[in-house]
Image (cartoon, rainbow over all chains, first blue to last red; front, side, top):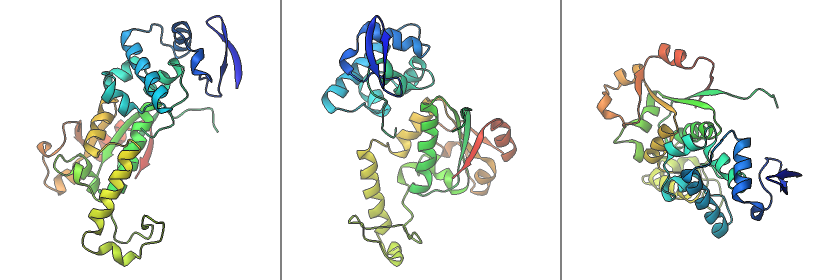
Length: 105
Length: 162
């Protein structure tokens, strides 16, 4: 676990570079984390996914699978891969301030 | 652990049982989720996984499978695997368990994997041997290819045979 300054705020990160505390998340933190993943701009579609994932995490306590995301958030598989190239679920979780997804799918 | 990351995989699926098909699909999907290029190549009975009318009816092979156990963990005598209905029962139990951990049925999974950018190929020799035609396959099947073309497409990839 390390502490790092992100968007002018000291936040704790886990070994995978994900926020330890979901409440440290903000739009600015999301932007900074997105840059680390080479995503230069966060648009409404990114936010649609992130908001869905954060809501799911709040209610179920776990990061939703990509299957659940694509079935319920209104963003399909192809869009997920173009929004978060090279790691749809993992990158979306990181930018959304959630832990690394542990599911199979 | 080496610093060099895997960049590309080609996964060969050669078996047509439920437990023969899923590992390849899970590995292909998992590769794409990690940003690894992936292709799936279906051969011999593995083709059933991309044949429209068969893909959602794959069964667990219960005959000759010493790993089978009852739900309570007791080993199942291998001769029971051949009794009528055992394969169907085990299959439906396994499907239920998979649904619980969010693993989709084969048809839906194939769609997901294809949308993830994974190539889906059928083996030409098997297609000819089983007298199959393009229209027998699910729409996600990209192309029927020979083993030579398979090696061409796999240039630079790790080849995984399942």
